[in-house]
Image: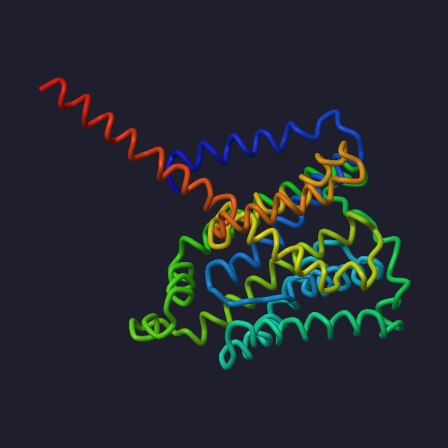
Length: 324
């Protein structure tokens, strides 16, 4: 990672530390939700943006992680055990879900993951003995660490911020590792990647498994954040919402899911001053962005920079020529 990226990350972290101070509980809750969905979007960005495997099931992995964590904490165990169990279970389930990707691609794979999302929703709604059915589960406690409570919203925000930073570091390590290069090779040309010695079967399964584990980790955060979960929170609409975060931010870019989650979670709140028109304005902005920049906001930024840089280079050449 270059010095420029390290400096940018340090400034962003300082902003995230100081922004919630003095804010009302609702603002802090929205910021915490943004961090949580950013983690889930990181996982989908790995599966879709880097490995090129379409998935419409990220919300279902959040649901699995959330319910596992809820059951563990309601049984009297610490949240950390539920978090580990949630990520472990979603990793294994994601690994299994990756097997259809070995045989089907593109929209056929999207239908497979869509069916899985629907299956998880139906299980959560109908198995009342385990999940509470449509009534859901309530009363999950927020964790304590070595006597430090996360009961208040600001305290819980900083707890989620720590998990967000850890997730971002892990995500950075993955995309800059040989696995990350293999994911990109799989996305660009699977046949060529296999001819170069990449085990495309193993990489495809890993893309689903790791991406799903990020979703499970985000779901584990959701349980103590809202302290109430029900099946409707993990339906198809929420998987599409996470997909929108990745696409709007920029699929295949490191900061894409974080920026996209900010647009999807924070922008509607900033537009509430328009009252009944805020959703229409928000939808119109997203449509315009997707029409003129399919690469998302980061792709748009790269286009702008590509137009600005040549002018600067020409001016430098002219200045050098004037000195000769």
